[in-house]
Image (cartoon, rainbow, N blue to C red):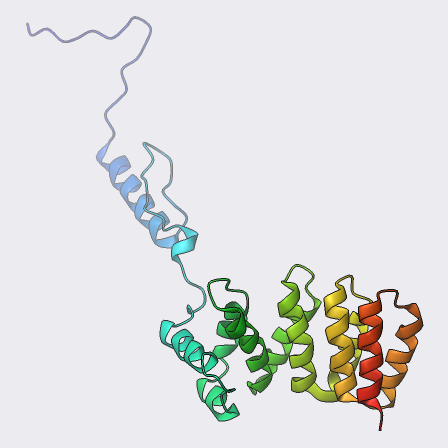
Length: 218
């Protein structure tokens, strides 16, 4: 008689899976993978390869050539014509916003990037400038430049947004806002500057308010 290995006493040997059970497991696994739900754990789990979230791009990345073209325009000694920025289209807005805070870019070009947003004819340009202006975590020079650019981009529509920043904690920004409002002029601007003047305690900002009032005179 041939000898067979004996099982430990009291433990039944696991029966071999039937042909029907094996085919059922294969079918369930295939359906689960197709549905994206992962393998069904009736037996040893089947590991599916899942791409990390970072490798899935939900939005197109900023093309390198567009950044290079923007930098080329910003490096010119004179301001690039409006037609040059219009040619690049709305896609240049996030490029300019990124360049404005890129410390590897020379300061002069960073500030020109903010100013250039006033020349891009798309609503996103004005929205980006307003976001720069109102975000206290952004660099002071970027916010100050955005105040001037927003006035250029929106005109009198920017008065209320700028006026709210006359009370900002950043004194450099308060200066820039006072001057940006003065360049817009008008009765509403004069009232805003006159209202703020007696409340302002910092001499240099008071001087900027006075300068804004001078500019706003009819």
